[in-house]
Length: 379
Image (tube, rainbow, N blue to C red; front, top):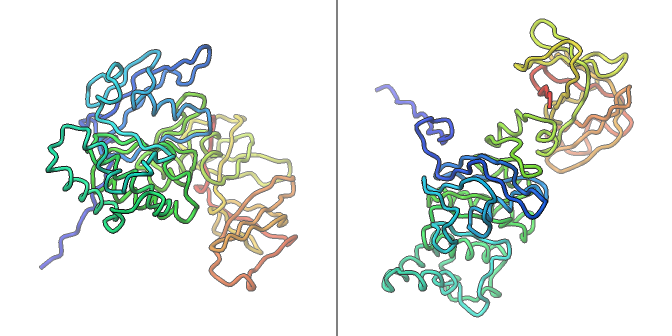
């Protein structure tokens, strides 16, 4: 019998014109006196998304979340939740819960009672509360800690208690404000995957505010990169990383080399002339570029190979000297100075022991990459 191939289900409601967004910001502006925190912003977020608002401090991401929670009113525009305008709905009447960075647990209450706190003040029948709390304890793997007080458990466990309490009333939407900021790096990494697992199991829509690019890239179905109260790009993590729409986004997400030059249109793509005497960069792009146009070229360090001779199968080569080396365990970053003084970072996995590394400081090396490895940017 022939085997049936299984096609993985791709979650991308934003690509389906028949899908209705759960959350809609329509031309939303928020002013504090003369300062505009959110500037005529329009954004759709879909049910069951794990959506990240990402940007530097002061970009407006927390203001956007506080308006969604009902703690701030927009100066202009509409905020719809399930098709209903919620601008005038008070926070306690919205099917929304918010989890703060501080967790705000009651120190004198047990883990069980912290989770039950909101349920006991709701209209849930008392005989159902115990079962609901038990369900939340199982979901967050806290069953054996139910009788402990917050000071008797770890930071990661306290984070899960706050999450369980936030999910106990089954909100349509959970807002997370820098929820992992207080955790150390390893625990933060572990907890990111726990958050993703819990979000998938509950089907609750999560919106997370973070300034941590790695965190957003790990957990989110889509990311909104913000700056000065505006959306700069909204896309999947891979779209943001591989196809940034501007120098700002390319530079904000991960490590990148940005090279500026003048374009020349040639068969099959463009040449970017960035330094006198240096071979031009060959690049493919679907953007409309004209001869002489000033462009930026963004290429990630891992797309560049470091070798003793130029790689014949790559379209681009540059010769330089190793200025510095960063050893990160699983990979090494080589900072190479080209003949024109341009510094380029290339990273390679450490598949061999450090003592057998091919290159060291001040070695002359070749950098090679393909014509599709980088992105041509005009903004």
